[in-house]
Length: 174
Image 1 (cartoon, rainbow, N blue to C red):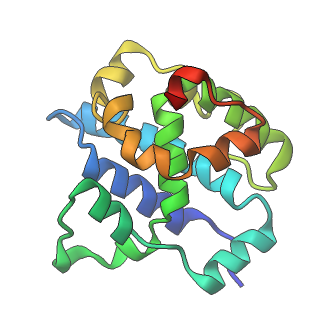
Image 2: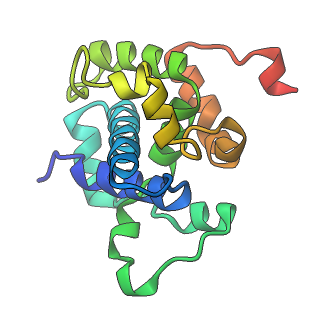
Image 3: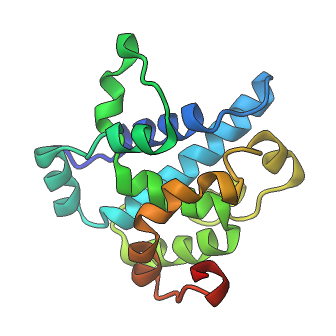
């Protein structure tokens, strides 16, 4: 049975890029894609930390992108929609939380390294996510915009914060 998160990571990152596209240009596309992939990989490792979790995911299938599309008003391209079934709502929501807050992404990376069997690349492998430079943030201006990400991030933020042992601030709740 499969123990690979690649389909979920790829579909979740692809959904994020479709919903929050980068500015025109090949470099912007590549940098935004790297950040979406890193955020999705980290979120997937947190969501499915053991091989048993991953096997169950493959058996039961991810949630798909329908609710995410409805929430953001995205119109799915029916000609190219098979990948959308592999997007996982929780992974996308957690990835949105991580993209909007590099400090939270750093805490999540630390947690994944110590608690997930298949944590994403160690030290430096998540640098575009946890320590984005100006070029990274410019290339992913929509993908990292907290206000734009909020409807998606809010879906499962409490579960992520609980997992990481982080309390929501008073400002975020108000």
